[in-house]
Image (cartoon, rainbow, N blue to C red):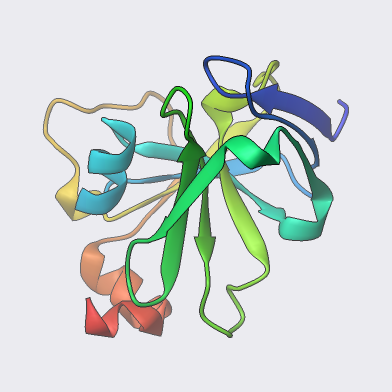
Length: 147
């Protein structure tokens, strides 16, 4: 399976090429991700330097918490990435929604966070994923203490 992936927004104004370092992705059920995506964020972590953006002039972004930002296409509104902006071990990566990939096949869901915030209408098939509650996330990602 190729770790080289391309993708883009709904209208095509923003495109990217990404070199993945892994094939597993996670799901976030927090309220901010649900509001940003209209569902849960199904995202894969990619080192920021491994993503080349085309049409970057169409990317808009906003600091959405004291420690992270989100970006979207200013033309069509497609969510493009989530990024930790704090200077810590989680910085330096972007979380790309896997739905943006031209070919999202071959990826494996390995974790779900904020599982205690997941609406009862959401259900994912399969087993073996690591599930984390909000409290688990706060304990692991200390940045969340202020939210």
